[in-house]
Length: 106
Image 1 (tube, rainbow, N blue to C red):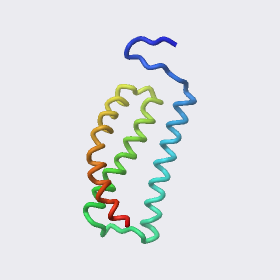
Image 2: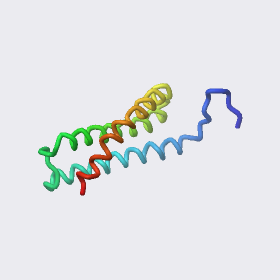
Image 3: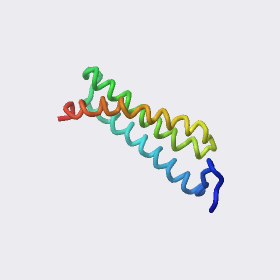
Image 4: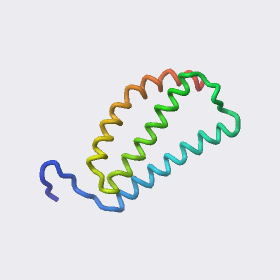
């Protein structure tokens, strides 16, 4: 299938729905898992500031990931590409906050 420069082939709506539904499921599992830990008392809001910063950055990543999978399904390709740059910019804070929090878990 030949395409013009800058165009992306559309693999089909079933592929779009698969990735969108997978991102929705992933986000729901993340929210449910952390909510369950809070409700059961294994996590509290009295945690260190570093843990709260880690939470905000990584939950933000889940939101960007979800948006990145929903936007193309709705035909919002330009916004999807803009969010791609936002996702790339989140890499450094995620690395900076993810590595120190490895010691928090142990």
